Amino acid sequence: MDQQGWSAVDQYISDRLAPPDDALAAAVAASEDAGLPPIAVAPNQGKLLHLLALVRGARRILEIGTLGGYSAIWLARALPPGGHLDTLESDADHAAVARANLERAGLAGVVEVHVGPALDTLPRLAGPYDLVFVDADKPSNAAYLAEAVRLSRPGTLIVVDNVVRGGAVADPAATDASVVGTRALFDALAADPRLTATAVQTVGSKGWDGFVLAVVG
Image (cartoon, rainbow, N blue to C red; front, side, top):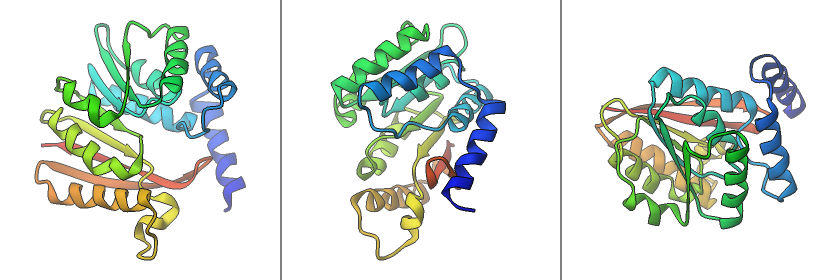
């Protein structure tokens, strides 16, 4: 099956199990209108994040990489009353779009958007978080993992997106900075005895990629 087929299956799944509501559709439209890159998670992937937060029983969530707030909406909707999500975005224009999208979704009081380089913001945050979702610049993946672990507790779930890179992660000839950063992430996961982790390949509307799941022990 090719990209057209993968996208068609994603659409089939999303239409039945993760259909857009007004807030999610508006978030996608506003992000497109603002010229944000089309790299947000797919609807079925957003639903997966939502389910992972529900299964984890997350009350505090950290997201590294906000973009237009689409994934933050999915995650925040899984929070119980009194729950909170901190999301980090380096681009002030992207953060403004995300804040508007979150307010439209009724989540302005639940989600705080922090603006600035994540590695500058993370040391100022106080854990522990129950779930951490990493979806930012890939060369910094290992550094983000270290901060995620620091802000975790036993049982915290860490999810890292875009770790297969179209198969390039396993190609010794691939030297792109995002691939190198992702390999550093895998090395850090394998070397940290506090972490139990795996990765899952995916195909779909976002192409051939995958994500890491890690639990802090």
